[in-house]
Length: 196
Length: 196
Image (cartoon, rainbow over all chains, first blue to last red; front, side, top):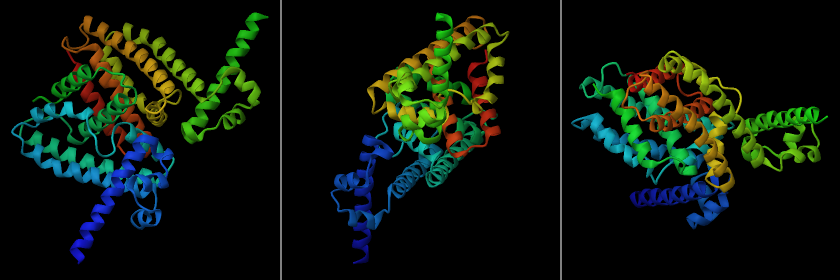
């Protein structure tokens, strides 16, 4: 019985988080209402509130999911024969991410963090987990001689996060920059900065 | 008479734009109401609407001001004895900008652009003007041998804009990253990427 309950609970939570993401992306954090999220999730408010008390709780759960996804992917990069080559390949996928908080939604949640202490805490905690993942990857890459030995793993990770957040938001919002040119330029910066 | 009118008009416009920026930064683009902007500018709605028809018009005028400011500064970098050195000095000032659209407000306007065609057009036009400024600087720097001859001026400018937008928003919103470490890391990336 317990096992089935846990599985069902996880499924219901996921169903709500998927619906919340759709609504947040469509209407923005402020524009998306809990009742619209209920409709999207095909659940009654009473049922949904049993899992999440409000939009902040939903953002917290989505950020947590994003971090766990990032943490589960560290292994790949830690085991890659050449970290820099593996990263250069990943650049193209940066503009196509379809799940989690990134691009425009990330920009909006960041703006919200400047006005909400709760959101700022959630975002800071998430940023620090991602920063820890990236720092681990670059520290290991430096130790194995895959990247230049003057690279500061944590400092470079901060810059990389800023670069990804800024570019994905602009590209998603206005489609303003040439994707091919941007991909090549990011690769150029990574290669010139990191190559041993 | 005409001259005094023009001067007075320019002063009134500036008074409104300063008030609008304060309100947008405090309450966000959606949270700031036209009546709050009137109160901040100490003007009646009738008077203010004579200059700007709504929040989009205000954003357009602020973006235009930002671009003109950036364009007026190109000269300094074009005439600097060494563009790379001059840029490395400027990095520290990136986190202290007090006027115009940057950091959190830029993140929010970017998010808004994904839902408003008018805002997307305003932002795209502004991005393209800034991109043109930066591209001109890097093209000239490359020609004068201040930066490496494999740097693509436009591509690198796109990456730099993304990096600045992403980092300033995160730093302003959550104060999450160590400023000294971030400044050093940005300098490191610029130096390694650009040095001839």
